[in-house]
Image (tube, rainbow, N blue to C red; front, side, top):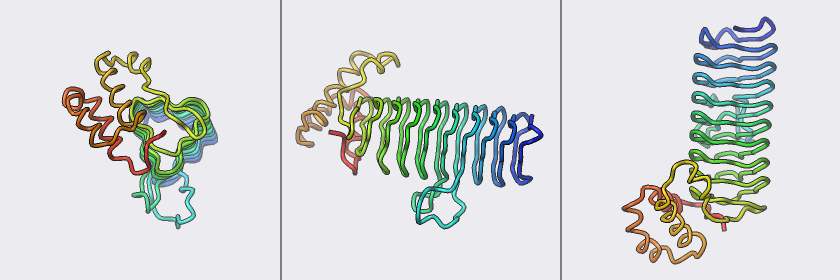
Length: 256
């Protein structure tokens, strides 16, 4: 399962059924679990932990040192979950000491070619990163987000679950859950209703989310007044609670 031209450090822990393509380089302190496929010319440096049944295509670089001027060789980590597809020329950096020491990618993500995920990022499950998406350091991405090609995330930005970014979006503020954004700098253009319906959200839940969006983002009603008006919906819909909690916890501010 390991090509004769691949270089695998003796300290690496590789499950018996992992396949490693030609000219791949696997460094020390790398762990790769069962069923994962590593493509040709891929480089994986440690400390890095990779779960089960991932597809890592050719010319990918995982676990490289963080692109941080303050990094001084500390043993930080990259942790990748299960069943992710990571396409050609993607790079994912390890964490930095200042950011907690770990970069995390969850499960079932589809990461297309030329994506960069910077140090100390936290990526949830079932997201789609289209070609050439770039995340600066410390970015957080929730679950089931769809990030359009060439979207750029400023450091420390948060992308809420089920959000949608259009092609070429430059994002320097937090994007709440369910919201569609576009532009440079990105602005919000409403709730991703089509995407939510495809995911099985009820019309009642979508209407409630839309009301929360209009009060907290579009109209920017004074926060205390908005919370009073939204309290019945928060109690009835967990989706609205997620939206409100995200907005209230934002330290960078919400996209305009």
